[in-house]
Structures are given as C-alpha cells and as structure tokens.
Image (tube, rainbow, N blue to C red; front, side, top):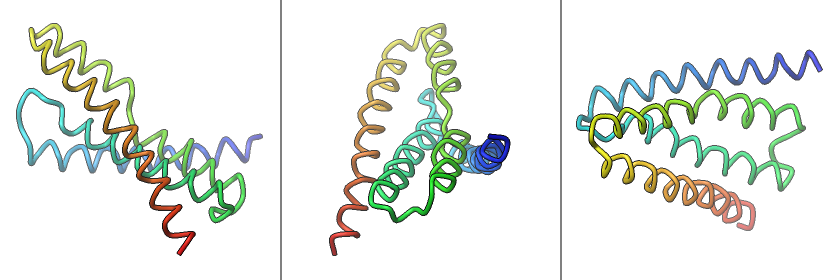
Length: 128
C-alpha cells in the first residue's frame, strides 16, 4: 500500500508541475473573462486519461502500477476540478453568469469529447 501511495504521489507531483507550466503558458498568451488556462488543462487532462485508460484496457500500458501512476497520479495532479469550481463562483460573483454557464457547458462537452477521442485514438492505433 505504501509503495502504491508513493507511485500516485510521484505522478501527482509531475502532473501538478505540468499543470502549472501549461496553465502559465496559456495564461500568458490568452486574455479575457473566460478562464482559458484551466479549461485547456482540464481538456488536455481528459484526452490523456482517455489515452491512458484506452491503452490499459488493451493491456498496452503495463501493470496496474503504471496505470495508477499515469491516471490517478499524473492526470489527477494535472487536472483541477477545485479551481474550475472556484473560477465559476468568481465569474458568478462578478456578474458574468453567461461566461460561467459557457465555461461549465463547454468544459463538460469538450471534456467528454476529449476522453472519447483518446479512446478512439487508441482503438485506431491498436487495430492498425
């Protein structure tokens, strides 16, 4: 159990550092009320988890430890639901209800599409 916790923590640390780097890059290059930086991180994380679980389902990701490292650890540290919720509260408090609703709807829709696309990519690659 302790070894598993360390594996997840390692992945989470890497994911958190990557989240900061990607978020900072997007934030420095996009502006407006819409929180593009968190949106980008969460959609990329959805794509990654679709890819990782697609690989795992076909036995191409190795053992359960690798799956935990990449999904629970890396993707869990990379994506950020708490920031997503906090940004929506800030938008609502700032009288940006339309932007908040757009953010919520587009995050859910694009997130689901990204996970499905990740599985589709793995299906396509493994069938070729």
